[in-house]
Length: 120
Image 1 (cartoon, rainbow, N blue to C red):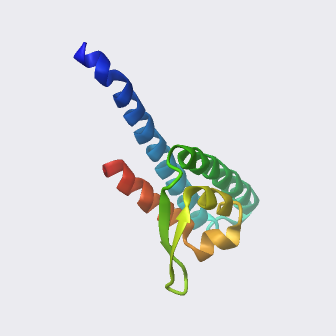
Image 2: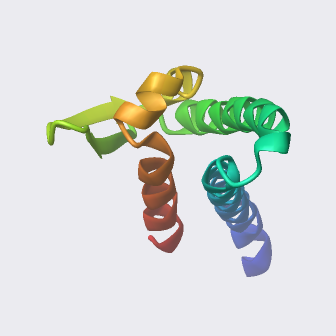
């Protein structure tokens, strides 16, 4: 009977951990492809398409997280050193804008946030 009481909360906990893992994997993938973009000119068109698609997938993951945690914010430091708190839903929208991704260093900030949430 006790195991039944803990069954559903633990399942939800593992779902959250899987989501954070998926977010971390997408962030790592985006960083690796972006790092290799200048090394391989012949595949740059493919790499750019991959980055756009990967950012879209990451945006969907962040949107799902925002539905389960509507008050959660991502604290970022922009290029000018200013600190901002951005909701996960806003982060998901920003992942479609390459300038915002670079300006707010979104991929690294999302990765840090997911690691912190996963270990908490």
